Length: 241
Image 1 (spheres, helix red, strand yellow):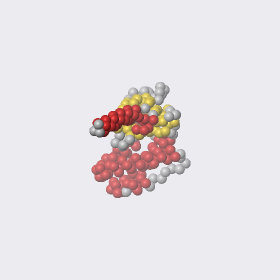
Image 2 (image 1 turned 90 degrees about the vertical axis):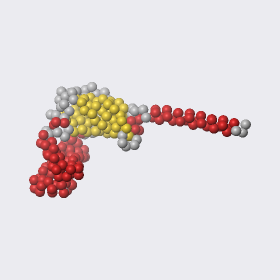
Image 3 (image 1 turned 135 degrees about the vertical axis):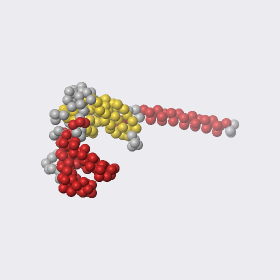
Image 4 (image 1 turned 45 degrees about the vertical axis):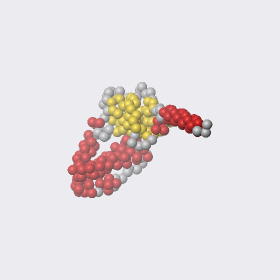
């Protein structure tokens, strides 16, 4: 009898452990169910659809891929996708074509990716089109995050960075630029009397030009730097104001 009781006790404990594990698995499965929705916007020139959700390289987050379709008759050169948690819009992803060839043409589709924490996905995220800028410069959307201002600042920052780099190359050559790339772009002064959004966009434009050139220099030296500069200069010339 003394040997049977411990065995019964062990069996009961194992049963409890198995049952608790089963409940834990069910609970985890329920918690991880994604709650992603696309806001209905039949009047929007840009239609969204959920394409896929995949694990991210960052623990506790996932990469969400959305498909964008231009359902208008005009090309689209910039757009902003807002994310909402509950009833409030909490964030925005602004996409700006770097040149006229990258604009989204009528009926064309393009995918974009966003990273969200797993908890945000569980709590529920809604995606919507917040801003659209057409190829002719006209705009659509509530523009909750003042994307138009941010874009204007970004384009001016890019323009001034291109001018600064071009002046440096013409005056002292590519070798001088490669040696003092940071100083060349850091010397650019931000114009006054603009909104915080515009200023952030301006700095983003300057930083993007510098980052592209710096990356090219690190990967392939001056030859790669010159090739990347040629692309940046060509984009600046081809892009409409």
